Length: 296
Image (tube, rainbow, N blue to C red; front, side, top):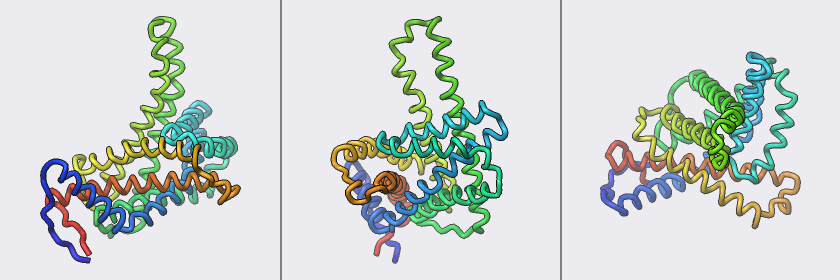
């Protein structure tokens, strides 16, 4: 593998087309992104339940029932950014798991849960390093500590979002008697949790691109890929829901595993979109002469 500097077009649609080609062909297709997306999909599904158990359990232990309720609302709010078909599969299972897990979270099993959850951060880091053509030589314990920090920050963010979800109905019930003109706008008010959690997803993607790769990043270099990933995420959610409800026949192929396979497929698509955003950022760096394109 050698690095060769090319002279891509610098104006208009040809420039956009070159960036897309560099990101899609030399990134997703030629840079092992499909394998990394599989790793990310497995890690997301594998760590989803342990992450929710940790957050709700720790919140209940330190903050009592009210904070535990906020944590449960926050973790449940993750479903706001998932397709309806995936929510139907996951939500009953998550509810069943969380109902009996808070009391047992602060045991020796919590250490195993931390390892599982930080494994997701490691899979994201590996995919980003490949996309940005970087190599991380830090000790694995340092990387795991960074993963733990990401987990804690994510938990705090979810607690905050959950608190907002709990407070919103109280705020609405307080405002309506004093400002009756707000009643027609209830649908907009009811969509605020989606706005909150979309902002949370944006912050997570932005932080992942900015801090996880083994290269110095700036906000301007990571923002384009984050916006592309976030936009395509919601498009993929609508397309996936339509496909799943009209054309999918997983039950014929996977029988009782159909729900798990459908969930894995969506997370696989999200993993590809996550890596596509990183490849777009790398292509833009190539365009500015800050990184050489990879060619066989």
